[in-house]
Image (cartoon, rainbow over all chains, first blue to last red; front, side):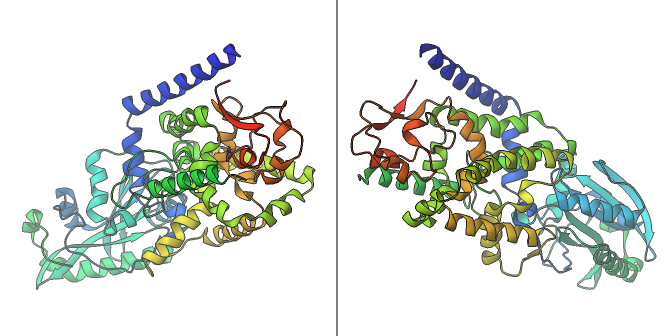
Length: 214
Length: 266
């Protein structure tokens, strides 16, 4: 009896001690909080946000566009593709995007490539949020227009739009698994906008501070 | 039958339901010690199954993320065992609402051999769909989890009408959800007994937990009143430290001879 009680107490101390060690010495608590609890799990709800293509001029968190976005806009549109590790829709979408850009995104955490589609250079940034640096993770917040109701996978395309008569960077965001045709339609629409506005695109936009409503 | 213990249990279940849904104000990095989905718009913590799947999905392996929910549940289960299912779990509360005396009788009509086989289904569910298929094939329990459907899909569809559309797993998840609803209405604690992967894991700790049900055999008259009321269908006087026991205390209430009690320690 005493021996059994000793085993019970030992196991309790062992489990709770290990738990304390894991929580205090690793980032699991923050990872669960920010990566699992605070972002909606599209796999859990078996749904994807039904979001129409809508262009925004200001970023979702109101921060400025990073300089590399603005620099790359001189060359063409920017296709940002965000995923996380444990996400079936992300796996499916990887295959679709690999097919469009003629590359292999399997097991790749960060990848950049450029393809010419619909007469415009499209620069793909493939970003696995579970494996990239904080600044690249922050890109997700810039374009996550649905906030915690969004989730991964998420695709944003940054192109050029016209706001109050002047050309400025704008973007649209889609969530969840999308079929190839829909993504190609999305790229086509963004490319069309880019071609319409590129002539008036000024280098001064590199210091563009997003303002105004979408 | 004394209702006092059951009132306390109901109060405990309601309190934990409330705590589980305080996430509208703030989110934590904690993990529920029972099956509850972090896709619920008001969830305050992470689903243990979801966290395990994140840790091992598609041949990835994050040891600390894997250990976190396991140690969280193990620490608590070592103390209270499956009382977590009986006193804390919101899905346990749901099944308490859906269960009736008639169902308890119906549950007892299932042939023992079939019921015994079905009881192992939750262990198969745990090993196969929480550990093996997510790791090797990428198919997760989460993809078809009826609890995610109940507390995630349905509330989000109501709160944000038109903002979400079904994905490719939706039809399968809907079928599983319908089966889940039928199950909990047809069988008393059907989900806990046969399919809950978290319950399967916690059940292992019933063998060594500090809190347990004790039967004083010198007082027992073998009236079987305890067996009749047990929602988990346990042969209470003859099975010590059953993995199925959720320590709900209904057997304690039912025993007119005071032979059954909670015991802490050996």
